[in-house]
Image (cartoon, rainbow, N blue to C red):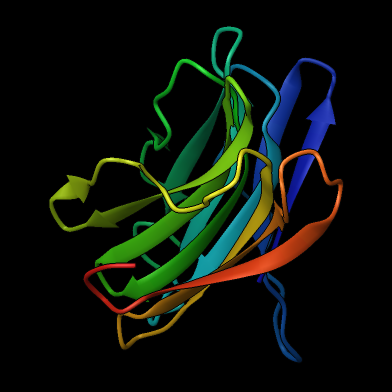
Length: 178
């Protein structure tokens, strides 16, 4: 499966498609928001369904949105605002944990810089976003998850305030907690 964004004037869109040795799927629209979607990322479900996150300027503040494919090859559900904050939320990443659960991570602007936040969606909806980074400058989260319900989250974080040195940080989700 591939995923891409296009920002043709007045027509921002996110599309998906797939190909194999014998077939090619015509591009299908994932989202057509009233803004410019940026940095789409996707995770493939166990049944071939796609889970997509992207950034979107929502009335002057960039937020993180999530759209899930209803069934492989079918349409996408209405996108959901995951971050729902008053500050910019950027660079989302997504990992599927089970047939009904996903994790989303992103950078959230704070008064002192950026922190990495995560939210989990299960069959009942989204949990409250939580900060997982420990420094005031934390960037570029990347998630990976599996059918066992566990996940790994890696990001870049300033080693010491004002040092300009950065380290990679790792947190793991055991299916219930970080």
